[in-house]
Image (cartoon, rainbow, N blue to C red; front, side):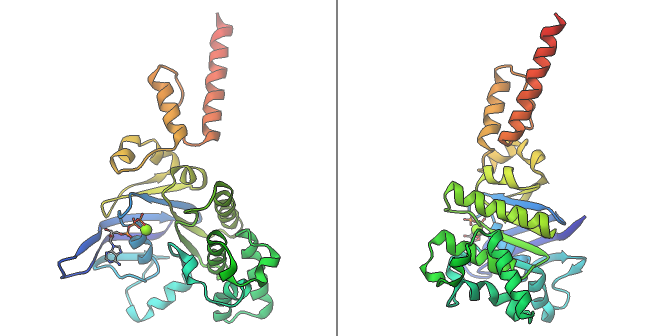
Length: 291
Ligand SMILES: Nc1ncnc2c1ncn2[C@@H]1O[C@H](COP(=O)(O)OP(=O)(O)OP(=O)(O)O)[C@@H](O)[C@H]1O
Ligand SMILES: [Mg+2]
């Protein structure tokens, strides 16, 4: 079932100036509830603009945004309500930290929600754990942390508010492979345990293939594909034409097919490659035993 629906959404920056730039051009899409959806697209394709539409930070010039069966701009004065439902961690969130300790920074949202001290403490610890923040880091100043650690704190702060929809704009950009796995793995565990709908913007096809259930492709201000991860990564030409790529392992499978190896064409992670090779191996063995 879809929890978010965009209908004919159009948006330009710098309207009626010589710098007018259409960032969303008649975007139509649905996002499924309780899944992780990846949003991919070349730089400047409109991903960050799109996610800022989802909690009312930006308002469409035309079109409708429906979240949880409600047109979020039906009553503009009530637009603030949508921010409790949709939590966004913006691109470069490390610049948004401000409290004296990591604990206070993560607790800021829950405190504003007027939760009990006990519940705030529980949420701070739980979201710190999902984001790989250790107990002793909670009493440090966020300004003494590395860029990657600051990003974890920003993410934990939004998670601690338990939004129904969690939107992450490049949560793993610039992190080393171990940091990426920890953050994205933590987000996946959080989704499994909380049932939250998660949207992740990323430039990494490998990460999207590994962690997302569904993928949306943006190109030149439009959503040009929306399907399961398997469906989208089997559209190699569409992705290459949109200035993107497929995961490395998909290239390997396609090169094998080009030389006549009958490997399935839905290989997009190491695990799916392993399964495809196993199937191929057992079918070759069966053929061998027939002779
Ligand atoms: N505040 C702004 N003022 C004017 N133009 C903007 C602004 N923010 C974005 N744009 C323009 O709108 C278009 C879409 O930008 P957006 O930031 O949504 O792209 P993106 O897909 O998130 O890119 P990236 O992958 O680089 O983060 C781009 O052409 C960009 O230059
Ligand atoms: Mg962006």
